[in-house]
Image 1: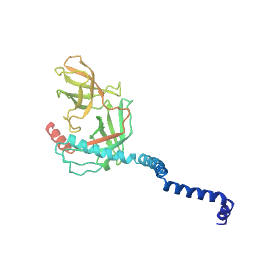
Image 2: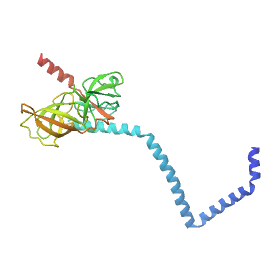
Image 3: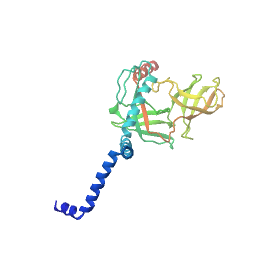
Image 4: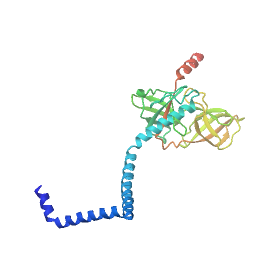
Length: 273
């Protein structure tokens, strides 16, 4: 306290000057509309800049929450798109249950491979999130792969860039379907085989999931025809499909559960016995 008093005594002239200057400025601003408007505008400019900077910082630290909200909204829209009996009035959570056969579960890829011959991805969802083998995995642009193995908190995904991957796919324009495979040459291009030569083709045609398996819903985008040629027997086309997904840059994904899959598989297995 004594130090504060000593400081005031040593600088009493300067402090008196600042006090009188402040008082004079207050009287000047209050008695002249021009000066008052300039002061208000300057104060608004300074405070607005401060609040804007603070808001930008706050938004940056809440980007994760915004991404979660966007994923939930995407879940909602995808569920409407791929289910035929949805209702906008039904509630949803992070596993998003709606009417229809399909449930969409958001996940994040925490490990990705695309340069090997048998590529596997790792996602941050597992058995505690109801993940199990043979569930489809997609992104906002198209298919990614199929759940291979699960633990409590994580799951591996058999990428479409895997020589063991076989996915039923069709031509958008004609519904002719074949088997989607990968020859390991490019992470951006896969091969569609067994399309009959009677099917009309042209470069740029869209390839979609066929819906003939119990894993993927019908009409999920895959890619577009880059080139094609007949096989050696000239009965079927070998088609090069350029993927819509950039397989080297994958983060946010959606796992698809077909609730009727076990019933369908059981029926088909019993028929083959």
